[in-house]
Amino acid sequence: MESTCPSCELLISQQRHHPYLVNISTLQDSQLYKCRCCNSYLHCYLQQWEIISIGYYDERQSPLTPSTDSKNRTMSFANSLALHLATNSR
Ligand SMILES: [Zn+2]
Image (tube, rainbow, N blue to C red; front, side):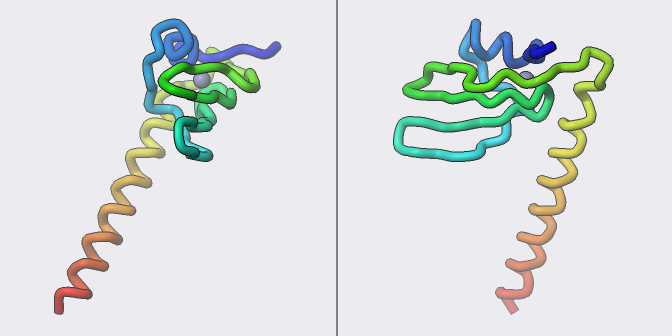
């Protein structure tokens, strides 16, 4: 059965951005996101959100997993950026 996660439901009802959104495409006034929690595709146009494609949300899945993953990825990006800057300053 197709369903959205609680974060996406809040996004549609309260226009609230949430941390599971992955930006896929950005145009002038329009952004396309995919939710890593329920795999829905969402479109934001002039601050208005709509669901393009409803994904599948399994309530047994831990919503903490994508968040931890994203944190690690940000950390490694920050580390490689710091390394890059350190190399260039020599
Ligand atoms: Zn979602």
